[in-house]
Image 1 (cartoon, rainbow, N blue to C red):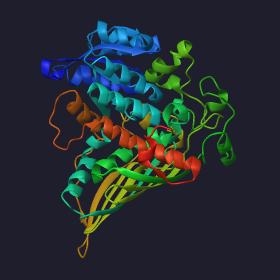
Image 2 (cartoon, one colour):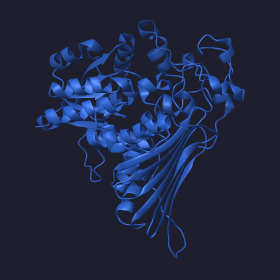
Image 3 (cartoon, rainbow, N blue to C red):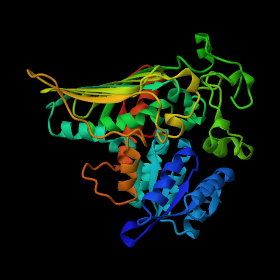
Length: 442
């Protein structure tokens, strides 16, 4: 019997960085009838203390805190039903596996993990224990993406032959991945895993298909030490306390953002983690310009491109079929103002702040032998990934109906992850990669 069937489910959050805040607010403010937040676990006590202080501001009592090393103790002592994993990506499997073996359910942030051995470990543990893992692919819950799913499932373009998917991260949002731990592929899997797994999951879901083979090319073009040739680099290691960073549009000023200051700047003494590295400093091992060609189980293909240094932010999806073409275009920010480029936006607080720049969306159906039709789009909001966060937590925490089967399983998480891992291997080898080979132990 699931925890929810027995009453209020008892949740513990492991990993109390910025992303945890959205989940914590959803638990204590939006779904108090079905959930109870009972504990935090992290390697950094200051971050847990910050979240407890914010809980007090919300009128909720502080919850017990545990060092990450005492994760198993926390599960037992606090009688945890569901573990919510929002830690650094490379540590996800550690907590997912421990929770499953202790008989707990798991909701984990995407990506489910960062490499094939860790993915195998999670899938094997799910199989051995019969446990449940849900991956928080919030993009599935965006009303626009739901419309695309419905239209394709209804046959709006007939049999799908191909998809073209372009994603642009602007020089404010994109730069943020190069300031923090994501800049190290060993901890994040690179943008093909950490960021694009969202997009690969959408294509899997839209097409009701699985990836078979991937060929890709990617490089670090704009950021990192070699990116200094473009003329934007300043000489500092991290922005805080550096005069050279004062008017740098690529610098994140932690002391200007109370939440980030408390979570990171004030917490540095415990673990030494610096959230505001120079995006042109040495040590970047991820790519910022990536192209992918994927073939799916249905025979359809996808061309995908991710740019992390664009002047505007948004995405274009074109689906070609036997009866026409569906086109989705979304502008999230039409430009980045130089004076506010170092402000928090998008990635830093994952969509909780409305961007100042203009945007919009269009959804166009182009049938054969007929004029194009503009499809009225679902209501849009600038909050929480277009309203997706609240819709997702309503299903995951509130038990709301899920007719589109949006809740992603561990298998779904693996399939999205494997497209990115195959792309990473193709970057290194220059050869096509069969996705199934990634899960075969070497």
